[in-house]
Length: 160
Length: 160
DNA sequence: TGCTTGCCTGGAGTGCACTCCAGGGTTCTA
DNA sequence: TAGAACCCTGGAGTGCACTCCAGGCAAGCA
Image 1 (cartoon, rainbow over the protein chains, first blue to last red):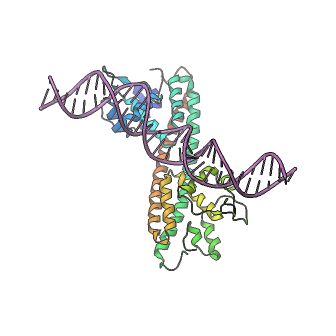
Image 2: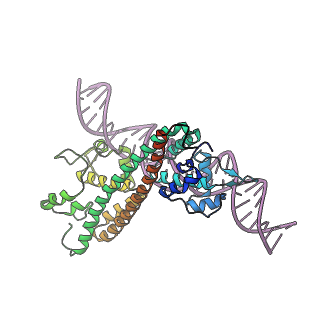
Image 3: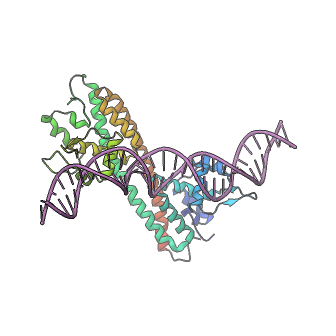
């Protein structure tokens, strides 16, 4: 195990639980299992099997194990990665940028700096988006307030 | 003036400034002018002229005045509307839903209830998105923290 | 043994939100 | 009054992120 794909993987197993306590929650998944079919993963993640195969094709996934007949067998590690990708997707990050991050992860530890930069840029984007949304919320509240008032006023007076 | 297109328009001119004081800020625009060419509006809003024409085609804009030669002349009211549309766009609302809202506005005052419902649904979406983004922020901070630590540790120890 | 279900692949298709084009008229500045 | 810059229209094209299809292999089971 030389390359880490998500942060908690880098931590030795004996100290793992402590760190995971502060780590974000993972996708719900059955215990004691580490090999899932594509349809199981689709059910866990909410993505379609099509999308999972497509993610692999474009280089967004690490290498996925295969059964002796060639069917995909996803590991818990893959599920972690998909969980993170899901978060990035929520930020509106283009898939191409996620692929770039995935490439950095595959490239090894010497890309830590680049990875951090990319995540920090994403972080700034997220903060901007939150601010925009809060701004929008204010506008919505203003308008909703207007319509609420209008509903309380007699129909003939007020807006016109 | 029987139909209001944005809330502040419904308020008589003499009481307007009071209400606008609590209203969200508008697009910056020159004073004492109420007719803008499409390229001026493009500059104010950040949209392209193409997009502005397309918005009109799909029914997202109210009727836009024309000069005697047929060129569009946008009013301050149109700019207000575009500002609001911009906010809705930030929420990720599909254009089709915005068109629906625009239709309600065109339909008249009896759609106040529907408009309010639509805005309240949007408000709920916005709150959900903000929560998702804050969640994502936590994940990003966790990972950024990891990479920051890794940078402070000697290369040979730590992650592996 | 046949049937259903699930999975595989490369490649084509879809929906959304623009974005551009061709061909032509209008407005501004020198 | 000429040339550049701007604006008009209908319709076609683009990029993104999936989404689906055809044709075929493999496993479970009645």
